[in-house]
Picture (tube, rainbow, N blue to C red):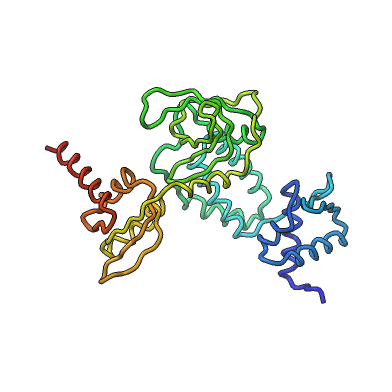
Length: 319
């Protein structure tokens, strides 16, 4: 017996919308999104086909709508509208001007199809949401970095980059093939194949002095971004254990993940944290000293020595 519940109807409509949103949609992708079996997806696709929706499929590839088929305009729920506002505020603060302007234009179109009551509801909350950034994410000389990177990735065209590292005062010129963009540690990064180094490298957008898309095609067929990011997990790590006062531990929950946090346990009213750390010479000891008067290093000895060295350097400069 077929499942004709409202839940199934909503899923079928959502599948139809997703089919229109992409050129090809895989059955497993749909099953993952709706947390159901492949058999259920196959059945829903057959239902759409029986309703006259022109879907074609290819074994091992996925499903697609026939060219020219379009859904009528869709209406948004109030909950979906609220998500647009949060996204708009994020775009205003965390992207470059070009992408921000494109998103603002898209938001005007979205708002234009809302019901009058939803427009009023929207105006009541949009001025009450504020996003703030701690530091500039783009250099003044390259304010449209993300827009250029997106174009480069989509068109598979190399970029010419002038980049200044933390250690050097002079910028170097690179020809790069961007693989993907990601946000981490409160900064935008992008991973590229660097023709100068003949290897993959990642760069921070706020250190870019200038960026330009070229007419040169990519020379390599790159894998998905996650493939290269996951390779970082093979970097050697050092086990670190620290003991910290319980009242302070809760304030470290956000930053500790950047230092290889693994686990924690309570011992006599204090919290013992374990890390698999990639940088015990610089990053971790400097972070530890921010709250070191409330904590103790249990292991390794090398970390204790390095923390003391940094304290001594600081003490000498204060005298």
